[in-house]
Amino acid sequence: MAHHPDCQPDIDRFVAHLRVAGMTSSTIINYARSLRDLMEYHHAEADAITARDILAFLAEREKSIGKSTLNTLCYALKYFYGKVLGDPDRIAVDFEDQLRNFSSRQANQFQPQTAR
Image 1 (spheres, rainbow, N blue to C red):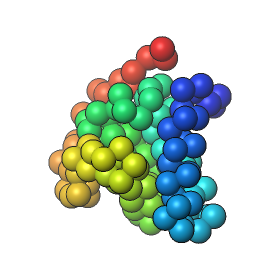
Image 2: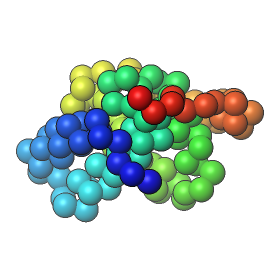
Image 3: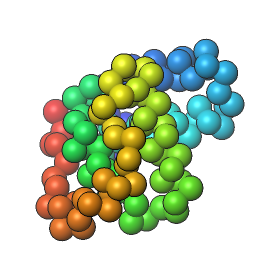
């Protein structure tokens, strides 16, 4: 998938924050990939993505990845929205409960935003 052109400033900002925080290079790569995947899935910049958008993305990804990968994805998004954007409410702390309550039917009905 081609990278959404507006993703890079958010990715760069996230990577810079992770480096200052002393994260390992593998964590930086995985966390940056998680944010990029979210933005590309929705064809939107990070600040335009809603809590429901994040939940739909996680519900879709949950179908094809293992639990530890899903946890990494969730931690990455929590870190970005909470510490980088200062919006910890964007991704709920109880994401596992929310994913269980977000039915497959809801996930299938969800349509990502169209490219801008």
